[in-house]
Image (tube, rainbow, N blue to C red; front, side):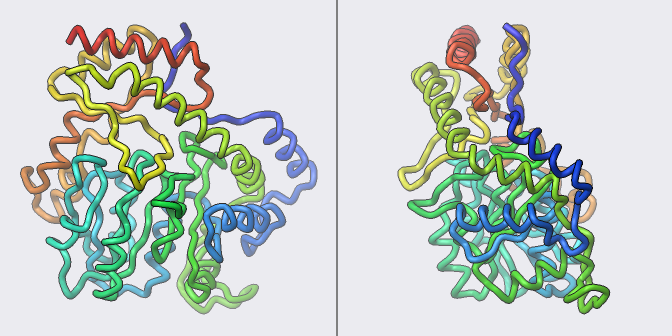
Length: 372
């Protein structure tokens, strides 16, 4: 059996054909970020998510950064962020001159929740970034109700949850913004790229200016911006990938079911919990080992069977040197996140894995876990 990575982009002839057309045309990008393919991708994506607007940018970090810039935040305003996530979610807060206020997670889903948010809100809190980690949506309704009462913005970080649903609504359609990444490992990719979804037309217009040097029209800059434009090549790939996303998600879900069936009665490992109101996007099939000391043994033995794994994330953000230096964290501040960082392990479920390979992964994982 060849090595099976934990994730892999699924690109085909359709993407190659479309890219060739663009290369031959020479129209690789558009000065205002409004090229033919970008506009088409934005329209398709807004329809898929169910929002009025979708603004394409060059990566997921730029999407988060742009969303914060659109809010006209003041220095030292506070932004609440889960500590158990990728660093981009927090670093953009520093880039706009605000204070990162970390919060712990719900250990069932590894997501931020209202009970942890309430402990951290102050009169300086201006926004909450909710991360739909691993593809499982955040329990948003209580957070949205609380935030509306406090006049706090809610930004959904949907980098890992393309196609996930909260009740019957798409992740990325409920908050003030939804911020997506199209990095190669994601449920759909543009190579590199990002998207911001919103129903607020005023904020959408600001975002379009922010991605193009703050210009309201050519050579007329009215606000501080960046070059966050998505190239035409990326948008063309994205529009094709979006058409394939439903099939990708079905295959990920079926692969997750195979793992669930094999591992559900194995004492040493907890399979992922999916809440009744959630449609999981299965970006990562993340297990939880009951004995964290056995994680490295499991990783090593799976690797010997050519099965890739991933640990997302081995260090909570508050224990990263950057944030320790800034805020003085020592450990013990966010116990659920610290415990999760020592015990989580992700297994492959990407759509390129065939049924035989998936059953092999499931059987070997079960066999090794029973021996631990």
